[in-house]
Image (cartoon, rainbow, N blue to C red; front, side, top):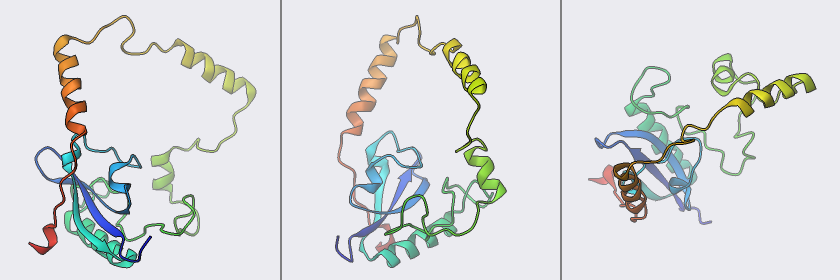
Length: 168
């Protein structure tokens, strides 16, 4: 991977406003990670490319600050951090962070993560899951719904557009 192999990308809503800003290299913008991908691949745009890691992180941070984050009430993005803290070269479980997670972050990710449950609790959880009925059991998709699903799949196969919004 070359020194200038990074880019900054955005996921757009149907109205054209961004809901996520990220930094990546390779196919990062088009593969599933912590945020839902847009239904239409054409709603994934490359804002700036051929950047160094530091340059991409700086632009990502600036754009997140510009649009603001939903989780802290400052704007429209679903980003969970202010950006610029990418974990390039770091183990994915560390991402360069030190110390314990804040109460707010622990609440968002669930307090049971990594918790060991007793055998009795695990049996109760298993029985509860067995009683759940999948939502489409005994039902069929209408022809209209099948057509919409088919169109959505076809539109996802189109190549994403490349946009350099910062230089225009």
